[in-house]
Amino acid sequence: MALRVDLTFDCVRAEPLAEFWKVALGYVDEPPPAPFKTRDEWVASFGEPAEDEGGGAWLHDPDGVGPRLSFLEVPEPKVAKNRLHIDVRVGRHGDPWPRIQAKAEELRAIGGRVLATFEGHHVLMADPEGNEFCIAA
Figure 1 (cartoon, rainbow, N blue to C red):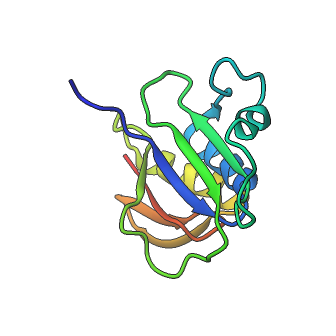
Figure 2: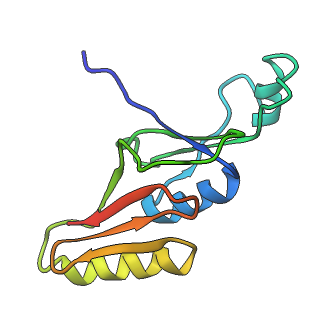
């Protein structure tokens, strides 16, 4: 039996970063685990948080196919290139290059940065906190 994979982002501001990735992937907010009615209630169930513990945000694929994403606030900044990155796939049907460019522009408009363009193939970008990802077919 294969195991599921969740991806966790350490970040400075969890909720704004989660909002970016909702647009990037078409994900939605993940509800709190049962029996909790809110995420705050769920977090409180762990007891008093450590002083340096920040907030969080959780997303999931509404179709149940992609991995769950967690965004956890941490005190230390990002200091190096990602060792793992996400490829946002726009599909291979027809000519995908216009869809790749359109997705890159959509994400640039909400805080993403284009780092490099590999004409006709993919666009390397960074999210608002500098995490690298690619948009490809």
